[in-house]
Length: 71
Image (cartoon, rainbow, N blue to C red):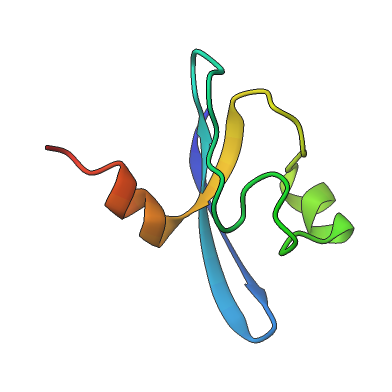
């Protein structure tokens, strides 16, 4: 399960990658992580983001490019 979600909030475009860790061992803890304060309830429902440790998480596209680059 993965994909890119793009939306506007506070006149700023946000692009998130929805990721799933297949072993459900660890999730993104930075900006837009499951428990991040940037989420509001309406946005969570619209995107389907849940605050639970299930291996599925959202990560900003810019951070995805840094942390998941090919070596």
